[in-house]
Length: 229
Image (cartoon, rainbow, N blue to C red; front, side, top):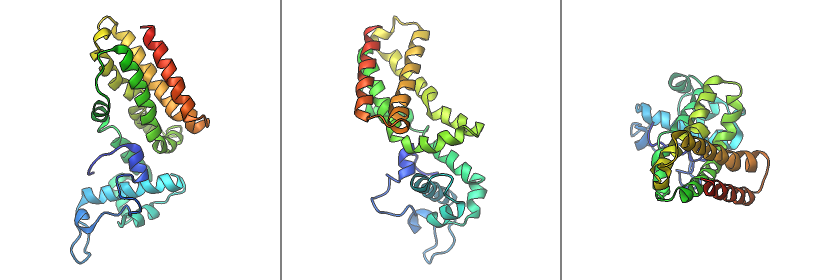
């Protein structure tokens, strides 16, 4: 489906120049020079996903129709059903894109720390920022997950449980983590993932807390946890 990028980028169109349309160029879509039929399926899928992410973010999932998505993408509406089995399949495709670069992105953004204490602090701060960046995706996914078990599985893959797996591997690499039992490392990883979600999304987005306060609370909590290990 072309290049995979983070959830919020998919929803807001951040990978396009400001003011640009989500439609791809003729060359990218594989169209004939005189505007013939698009024959490049991956490019058409990408165009539909890009259109859906923009409309879902701007108008909401329920208010967006497949006809509007198809028109925005410059594709036939029937392709949405053929490629994705409908609008919900498009949302699933957007969500799945989040899992493809998680580990790479984390390791690129965060230098490894030899200190477990420092690693805990920076991982929690990173998680808060990551969840905040993906807030539009979570706004759409969470209500759907309450109604659809398939969507809840996807949410689990990009939510705290999935993140805990990546965080656990980072914690294990810290030098003073060698003395910790696997169950203790798992508990810390789950805590960081859950706190990142709570302070990065639930508190600022759903409860309206100031992000500055949430980040300060996270820093204090992480420091207290690190001192106790």
